[in-house]
Length: 107
Image (cartoon, rainbow, N blue to C red):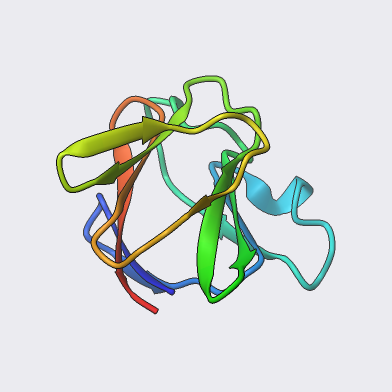
């Protein structure tokens, strides 16, 4: 999956991956990628979300983050429930914390 971070950086993220301020501790298994993001406001949790394979696409799972996660698709925003996977599509925007997001730009 290719994502564009709100910081302007573009990344290729495979599944499974943990995204957060300090995801290394949660991604202790070598098969899980740790995607560290810089968030000076600290509204993004250390291990905020997991990206995982879901049937023919990828999904995002909130890992019990302190400030929540939402998936914005078109004019609809869906708050994530901790531990429940939400499938992702190209064009989705995933909000993490107060003002950090990433856009799904391709698979």
